[in-house]
Image (cartoon, rainbow over all chains, first blue to last red; front, side):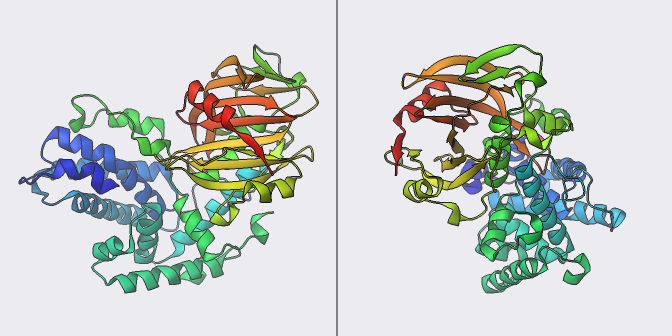
Length: 187
Length: 260
């Protein structure tokens, strides 16, 4: 889907993101992917995910003349920038508690359905956060960004089978850790 | 059902992961307008933002249209009437939630388990057997459409309803809620939504434009859309979509038939 919408932007040229109009369109198409990627890697911190998204595209804009490649490569490029920003941020904030704005069991919403959704989302985000970085990123790319296994494999430079098996094992670990997981168990 | 007695299958985990689709807050977009590549002005928010995060949307949509506190709760402007339900300009439940205003659970009249697996795709006949009443559905699924889910909705007053979500070709969802018409007067806040009295298949109805129909519990954001509610055959129906106008919703509504 992304490829279809971006393909016209990437007619052969030396620096496909150099022009402001092209970059703006690229931002339109990709900023949600970057935001969701950062959001999930950061454990559901909306403020930080917004900051990472803004910083990522600001940095990409500064270095846009250097980029070469197609639509997929452009997204992979900005995600790589985002990952570095996430790592920097995580180092500064390591082991901070989960964001208070996520509804959780200790702060129940009054409507049961919303509470259920919030509890489970919070649990899932917590469990994701406790996975090793590369495994968490595989799940984020595969499910939250909706990439095919083949594309995730290319992004990591690993065989498809390796990625598929790793993702399956991650899901099993999440399942076994649910819902009474102690986050340390996954590490 | 609570989180404590819920252990997802791998397939449910996959669905739950796919449902994590947060969006930045409005302030993020205001700040983004100053970015250097935006010399020509900020672009429209992408269509993807309007996509439903299916599970969360269910919870939220129910909050929006089923949370009907007693009429004596408010003294406010009356915008419309549907049977015994009075629509006012008081904030809707999603608007209260996003603003951090406490919402007593008693204000919700329905609790629906958030669907997270394709196993929730009951046929009208299956669901009809569960709720003991005919389930309304389009006679045939339009080309390019698919069923997101169809599940039972347990009403707070003990009644049983049906909730269906149809995935449209643009990946947006059209949600249809059907429940026994309540028999006591109630009020429903719709915030700043515009309300118009309409008829649906000759029956009394209400068209609400710009109503907050989802509250993303992860991002704590609202998304507005349009909703058509009407009463027919002892049931109240609510149809919701982010962008569909009155003509589209009304045409769909009038094509529904009871199925058992």
